[in-house]
Amino acid sequence: MQLRINGKDTELAAATVAELLDEQGIDPGARFLAVAINGSVVRRAEWQTALLAAGDSIEIVRPFQGG
Amino acid sequence: MADPLVIAGATFSSRLIAGTARFPNQQVMLEALEASGAEMVTASIRRISLEGYSGSLIDLLGDKYRILPNTAGCVTARDAILTAELAREALNTNWVKLELIGDRELLYPDVEQLVHAADELVRKGFIVMPYCNEDPVSCQKLADVGCAAVMPLGSLIGSGMGIANPAAIELICSRSPVPVVLDAGIGTASDAAQAMELGCDAVMIDTAIAKSHDPVRMAAGMRAAVEGGRLARLAGRIPKQRFAEPSSPQLGLVGS
Image 1 (spheres, rainbow over the protein chains, first blue to last red):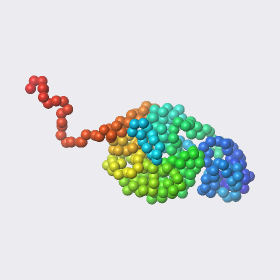
Image 2 (cartoon, rainbow over the protein chains, first blue to last red):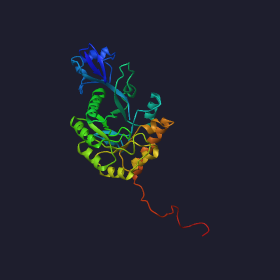
Image 3 (cartoon, each protein chain N blue to C red):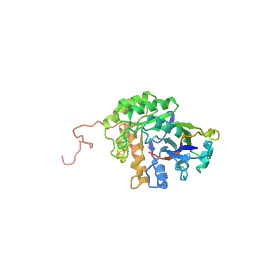
Image 4 (cartoon, chains in turn red, cyan):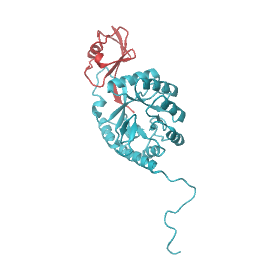
């Protein structure tokens, strides 16, 4: 399934946000992560159940240094 | 706590909000933040690197500081709002330093979109602190839509040019119904003191500390300047006059 992850087109088999993070080598239990699909935040509690669809645009973010 | 800063019901004993970017390394950042006395520090929200990611900045700052996430770099209200929502999810805070940039070179705010985004974020339950123009009308509009504070710029972000228009900052401070935090442009301690003397409730400093030759010492200097400026403001400065007035007694001069 073709997904756009952090601005990059990627071919993935993941069906849920949790699987997606896992496939990308990101620990879904890591603190301070946030995910949005098509401009809407998906709460952490929904990562196991939120289903992905082909063409979805996904943002995976965390805090960095800032002013 | 004597003379606390109150924003949206939260009280702070420090009137210095510190940035966390541009330090030579994390150890210097941590020591400088400590020396600054800041209780609230800013962070950005960025895409993680898919090629492996290290521990989060927030792990280092722990529970020691209130984190104020920003929407730095956003040029549309839509992106700024999504960034604020992602920050709320990542950091479990509804506070946001709202930045909406209208010019990528000057980093000047886009006031039209800023007011729109602020309005929407307030409706969504955010505590909004917008980086804005040093213009009393923009600041009033932002307060009117429910911003918890306004953050007018002293001069361009990262420029170190100090307060370009002190009269405008003073006007904003005298009229604002919400706390005024001077943001951007501070270059050295006297700029921070001046902001406080003009009536600002707090100052936000990043580059002036982080890019100093000795960030930890500069952080201590900024802390002292903010405290000194605040005390001077509360005490009330003497009026300026165009003639001399001797400070020593006129009577009993030797040899007269």
